[in-house]
Image (cartoon, one colour):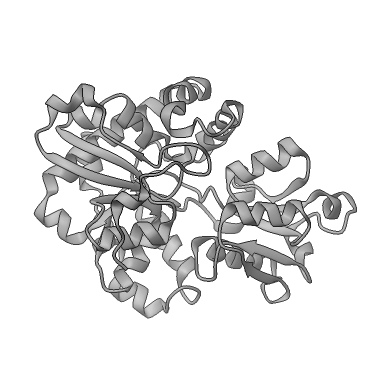
Length: 347
């Protein structure tokens, strides 16, 4: 589906501009031209991209970059495929799905080592009653996801399978995170897959409890067995051949921004990115979210073969046949870390 990029220039429900134009202070630095960079939502998880924009790191590399809230992974994929975005950041599984659909894409930079939206929240009444204290206790219950076959669905299926109750739990698609959160808060469903922001709201408002916490490394490893690329930056495979200098400039800026994340406090990061990107959220919640992401962000930006193969294993038989994944989307053709390695002088 072809989408009008200008149609996304609007005030979002969070009160923040969906499209952030290039900073005019750096306009004279343009050398490589202008690109559109899509992010799947407004969230502190994308702080590296916000920092690259705010500190003029893209412009220092000769790029004029518009940062676009494309509002979902599926929309980002569609816009990338249609040429309306040059690069996008959504779930790494989205890049794989796009390639399987016939539009070859390439992951060029990693954001994290765990899927930060794989938390599971349950209403506090069920938790406090003792009926649901662990994932296995969800047998006979319902859990909300965005939609069937989405990344949230995949995480729910895998975690439930590992707990031995996948066939005993109804997985219900509700469309978006706000609806999912509201459904648990009002007891329409007992549990939901949850983002860090949803977890923060549940804790602050006192209506939810965590059953699965991605920020707990031991809990994560007990289910997933190690690092797993959740969010990444990807481009069309043809762009790697046609415009490698642009991808290198993009990677250079993002690596510098990631280094800022690594060395800065959550409060300092929030001060930097709050305006204009996250001003629709309470600043305290942004700081709390960054505190969590500090534990899940990938500060090397490298997507490892082990982590990628782990993701393929989770998708196999759930989102695509294993044979198709191994044939069409192996690490060697789906992931290109040469740009990050060059940016980090890794040879």
